[in-house]
Image (cartoon, rainbow, N blue to C red; front, side):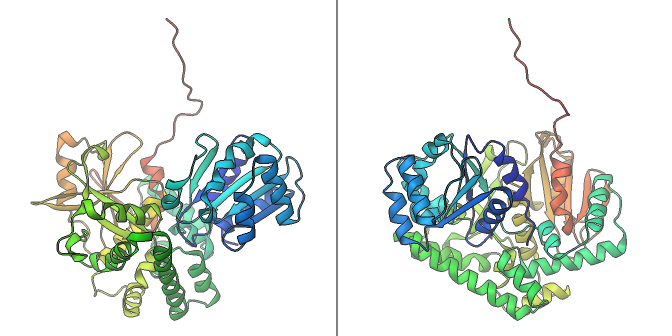
Amino acid sequence: MMKRKITKKLETWKTFADKKALLVIGARQVGKSYAIRNFGKTHYETYIEINLYDNKQAREALSAASDAADFITRVTVLSGQAIVPGQTLVFIDEIQESPDVMTMAKFLVGDGRCHWAFSGSMLGTEFKGVRSYPVGSVHELTLHPLDFQEFCWATETSDEALDIVRQCCQDETPIAQYVHEALMENFRTYLVVGGMPEAVACFLDSEGDLAAVCSVLTDLNQQYRRDISKYAATRALQVQSIFDQLPVQLEGEQRRFVLNSIDPAARYEKYQRDFVWLTNAGVALKTDLVAEPKSPLLKTANPMKFKLYQSDTGMLMARYPITLSQAAYLDEKDPNLGGIYENAVAQQLAAQGRALFYYQTRKRGEIDFMVEAGNGKAVPIEVKSGRYYHAHAALDHVLETEGYGADLGIVLSRGNVERRGKVLYLPLYAIPFLPLLLDAPLPEGFKLRIRKI
């Protein structure tokens, strides 16, 4: 059983599940159904699951329900299970096959006999057609592929090693060399395998067979292309063109997505919906250029100039020749793996719920990522795949410019934890612990008040 961070979020939802249904969204095959199923079986006396993709009869029956009572009756008939009031979780999976079923969520919650969970893929693209989305009656969670910490859990990396990394990042002290070297090797493995549960399971079951892992990842990429054909409707060819160009664009020097690679006459306005489709479906991660590296970053973001990463680094690696995966794992000097490392970092930042931006100047170059910190300031993050990581002119410029207000810059590299002035160097495998450095929690017992006048 793979340990996932979403489990704690599901446990929190259960405390108010009598007021809101659950909706878990995310890309295909990231483990949504597995997480809810395991949670339901371990936290409820009765667990009922209905899959609208596999069961056409269920899809038609639930879509035709007249009210909450009728809906629940149909669930019991379809499942052959009785509702135990207050002790039942009903999970409707693949809701994208009949998104209007979500309109019943408000009334099902109001019925009060059981808790309700919904999930599906491509929901960001399909919910536009829902007659009446139950705003206020649904608690929405997004699940991403396994991040590196979850990958470490799956591969049985010791909690002690991860605790050492966490503490050293907070104290800004070097990590023991034997821990550092082992986790850097594990991170390179993660570059190749990625965080898709099926690929991780194959990696473990096959005892590291690269060919077997790549075969699984190739199948997942093909499945994503089939989903594009099914759900992107009249724009399927355009969306597939963008998806096919993604690994090619990340090989470029600047890694910015060049529209004329699709069509020499392409304009962003014409393809805007296609990029939105890919990001809403969880297939790609769009990173917009900002004109100023200061908070709020969205204020100066330019959606027409952007980088496009794939949602999972393993799936990206599988789209290159297998020799690139070998080179990444063996840490060979050639070829240049800058785009792969950036993709892995983008994946981790997205899993932390961060909006993705980057900054670029003609004179000093580019900062790979800009993120918002809990103190209201923007933090520049550089990703260095090579062995020389102390040179970062663009990041230095931002930190030295008083008007930007930046007091911390982070360089993620193969190096150990190190502090030089405003720059904090962290090993790439320490990305899961960035929230500890960027998102300081509110003081314990912090309360709001209304002043009467």
